[in-house]
Amino acid sequence: MEIPKLNKLHGKLTIPGDKSISHRAVMFGALAQGTTRITHFLEGADCLSTISCFQAMGIHIQKNKDEVLVEGKGLHGLQAPLDILDVGNSGTTTRLISGILAGQDFTSRLTGDASICQRPMGRIITPLSLMGAQITSQNQNGCAPLTIQGGHLHGIHYQSPVASAQVKSCVLLAGMYADAPTSVTEPVLSRNHTELMLNYFGAQVTSKGTTAFILPQPDLKARYITVPGDISSAAYFIAAGLLVPGSEILLCNVGINPTRDGLLHVCQAMGGDITLLNVRNDGEPTADLLIKSSSLHGTEIKGEIIPTLIDEIPMIAVMAAFAEGTTVIRDAAELKVKESDRIQVMTDNLTRMGADVEALPDGMIIHGGKPLHGATIDSHKDHRIAMSFAVAGGICEGSLTITDGECVNISYPEFYTDLYSLL
Ligand code: S3P
Image (cartoon, rainbow, N blue to C red; front, side):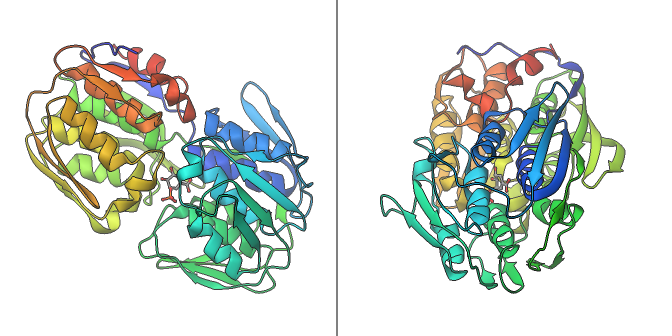
């Protein structure tokens, strides 16, 4: 796919629904009593994988034009799937559904695409096994395909070695089925959508510092959910608006949960002109973001901010390559186990464009300001790599091509249409 040039972006855009929140709304809706109505649901391939997994377990889910209706059957209403569950490319589906399956009285199997079958699942197998589930990795490599024999779980305290909302959520969901309270402590706080939404559905979840606690749960109640725009999808437009000279764009309805908003702080530290308008809170804080083109400079990104911008690092790396001065990203080794090894893939592709980038075991050093030129970018079928380089390719000299550019459909099917609507 050859990438068009970007010039003076202007206009406004409503950002599609948050991927993390859309997944959770379907899952919790399926486990609730009654019909959960979800508006602004993200119709990306990952969230559709979650829907099809729950349909395969007997949950009726109807997609209308402006809403998704999930007819919940209660915590114990799932049916054993007849076939192996297909999670596609979705790490969130895999890890959260495993927590739910660990609480069921039946045996289930799940698998996904080539990327998902290489991503580490030991991080959920360990706590779920401690809780009493029997989980096996078919190829004995700690990855999917997984077989999960659930039921009779014990409450535990789990000290997670990684700051991961997927691990935390998996343990909390299993905790609903346990015989005693369950808690998870993570080294640094990760996104807290599960805690917020489970409470909204009537579960008893509390948080203190980096520990989340849940009580065994008799039942969840169906709810109405309006999904805010995904800040991880807004990231490409924030970057494009800042980088393309003469741009001014308004991004409407973007989630700005403090466990997700690290990108905004980094952009401001780099000299980006971003104004938050119409800040509101409907369970999740949201705002409209006014972005004006700015001259950016390098910054240092490390420590507790990392989980709050983990999915935005590919885009930040591109911004850093166009910015003046050096950007250092540390404490982000988790990037190696995302949909692709994002440290290596970003370093290789930016280097192809003429950038001065060094890969570190836990991040990157980017000496910005070198003139960047077109290249053939290997997306590794990673949606966030493709979208980051669609922005880079719109700004650099010469023509840039992205392999498997349609992989944006994982989280943002209308990405290219939306980007070029601002020209
Ligand atoms: C997600 C959590 C993050 C993030 C992923 C979505 C979630 O992963 O990278 O895109 O919805 O909980 P980790 O929890 O593995 O850090």
